[in-house]
Image (cartoon, rainbow, N blue to C red; front, side, top):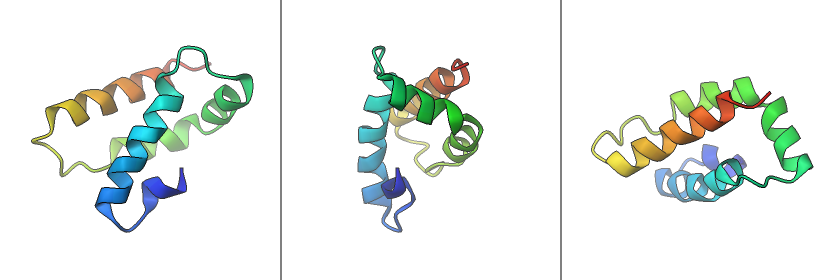
Length: 75
């Protein structure tokens, strides 16, 4: 998750693709689920501001919105 904050936008973007595998996986392990749930608010804040300059990349926007929805649904 640290690579999501790398100074390189390209590394951030590629790290996002790895991160989404963990969030989108319907069969998350308990430790992964707990880490995501524990950091829910911080992740939502981070993702809401993550690479907002990629407005022309519709797929990225859809994937980011999906991850935000998945994280919001965690209890």
